Length: 93
Image (cartoon, rainbow, N blue to C red):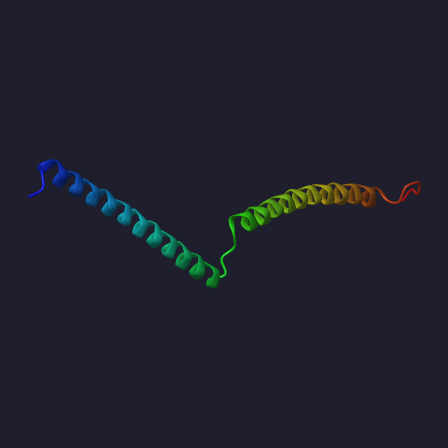
């Protein structure tokens, strides 16, 4: 019969090996799940975060430019309306 110390050493080694195997299986499962999720997302034609943020920034810039153009158009329309009501410049009506 083996001494007690040897039995405990063997059991400890077995447990350590089992824990290592379990971690390896866990890593493999995570990799497989990640690969599967990426495949599903690519089939759904989902945009990446970088693409989304780029388009969001472009839309914000376009909104700002649109607001500036609206203000400019309103100012020009007011100016034109004032000129039309007074008649052409230099001609008394």
